Amino acid sequence: MSPHRSHWLRQVLATDTDVAPALAGEAKADVAIVGGGFCGLWTALELKALEPSLDVAIVERDICGGGASGRNAGYVINLWAKFPTLVDLCGSDGAVRLGRAAAAAVAEIDAFCRDHGIDAEYRPDGWLWGATCASQAGAWDPVLEALARHQLTPFQVLAAQEIASRWGIEGHVGGGVLEPSCATVHPAKLVRGLRRVALAQGVRIHENSPLVRLERGPRPRIVTAGGSLAAGTVVLAMNAWAAGFRELRGAFFVTAAEAAITAPVPELLAKMGWENGPAATDSRFMVANYRTTRDGRIEFGKGGGVLAFGGTVGAKYESPAHRLPLMHKEFHEAIPRLAGVAAIHSWVGPIDRSMAGVPLFSALPGSERVFFGVGFSGNGVGPSKVGGKILASLVLGVKDEWSTCGLVRPPTPALPGEPFRYLGGSLVRRAVMRKDWIDHAGGQADPITRALVALAPAGLTPTTTSRRAAS
Image (spheres, rainbow, N blue to C red):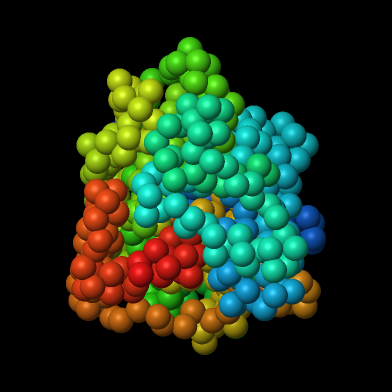
């Protein structure tokens, strides 16, 4: 086992040692899916539900869940925080439909796990989006205002004193909002559970089979080091690794989220009232997050990590967290009662961040039988359930609410080529880091810093919110 696996995967793989055979020789399938994470597995399961006779095969470079799906924080968040962006992409009616579908997907994941005996540690304790300094206060206001115009009120506004008294999170001095329908899961238990169900339903899985090339044409063909798989349709569900395709590389960029976990401290969490409380994030551009686990640990992390040159997911994404001292500092500032609690393990996960902060789905340009889903932007646990429905409808050629929704759009290049993308991205990233620091110091960022921050893509909060905070 890799020493840089996430805590989640290390826990699961201690007992789940099953590895599917690598692709060998020449094979065929009706649908071939590249990627065995949440998006790929949900797509396979949706296809089998709609057309049980379909021969569906998954080709995975590592093990199912070894990529982004087994490394994330396990937040099952809907898309209400992205509502202004959804309105821009889908129109008002489409945004409402997608918002409701993504909210329903959170509960659907719970129901699926119960129906199939998956102990994913699903906890419907909500998501707290807070402010850890005065300049962050009200970062959610544009979202709440856009939702209110459509008579939607999924968030509850909380004062700083209530957040501190209910859960002991005293560092959210600017208050926050609670979305009570969100949840958390043990991401590795969920992805390995989906794998088990997919196998039971006849989906063929080939692990340890990295894609070498994709041969285009009326019947595309996947080629790995050990074999090939010809299929009527191919789905690319590769997360950050999809940047290997030039048609997709300009539509998103590859960054990193870093995460860490503590030893169990259940007594301390019980004193705080946070043993079953919400998962939390702040309103930094480089968002900090923290949540509890069923066994009384705290997982905490930070977005906005290293950028990938040319979209290459290399060794810097297979390591302990690069910014662990900073992560400790922000975690302890947000929750001073946990100042003596430190991480015992950390890891890095690649993020396929789109400029809009929401995923996109379509056919690969010039390849009408190759579909893709990318740009989950670090919040894919819940939206990947919707993504599976979208990709299944695209594969089957069905004209419905999924295949015609506003998330189905071409991968329009929004970013320059290399080396300009990496150099420009690094410049913006440094400006974002500087502004986050200045905000918490109570200062005012200079005009150049604010101008550079305005170029940053949407993070956890929508672009409209980010630009307001940058002004």
